Image 1 (tube, rainbow, N blue to C red):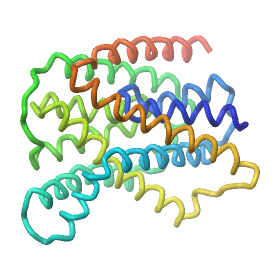
Image 2 (cartoon, one colour):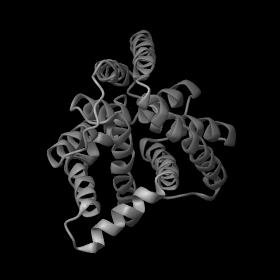
Image 3 (tube, rainbow, N blue to C red):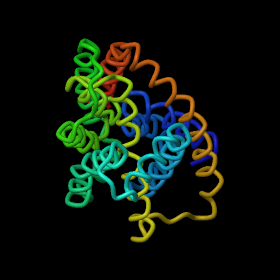
Image 4 (spheres, one colour):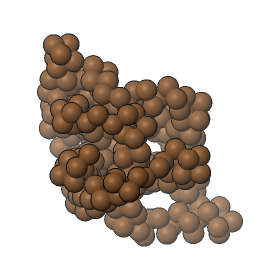
Length: 264
């Protein structure tokens, strides 16, 4: 992988991590188009690094909320801050269970499975369309809501299903305020990303060769900067009920991906 290719993938990750169009699906599509010949393990390593970059951009944007979560965890008082922290923890449970029990099976999906990605993008398109038509309210995320949203996040581990799209759409369909839904969606994934990276490093699954350091660093920087911009943009779009545009986009890309896979 050269530097230019890494930067392109980094920009795509930064945009699609927050915009509801599936970052993992787009990364696999671009890898197929660019002819990336990385073995699945190497490809997964680069994908994890890019997710780490966007997780950092989330921490920067939501630094006050992150501080609130940590404060809630260590206050040992059942107040608003600790309750919000508990909801974040609850939302993580489904993805943690699926990730631990089906890790090997999930990794096989990240190997240019274009047909699967195409169909999952169509699922994302439907979710976004339904959410865009839902009525806006000022409802907060409840404990039961956090579990349901967490299940959506676990399903979104499949490439092609947008994590932010699935979780925000689920939240909005549950009647949660759009801005609060976006904030919860972006915050709930951060612990999972850092946990996944720690697990891979300790397990020896992430190994950097000297020749990979420069392109991976370039991809990381590109994803981080783009993620900062995309995160703020997405919050504004969700608030203004503009998800239907992304629904159309996902539907078009999904159909193209399916056609590409069938004709190849």
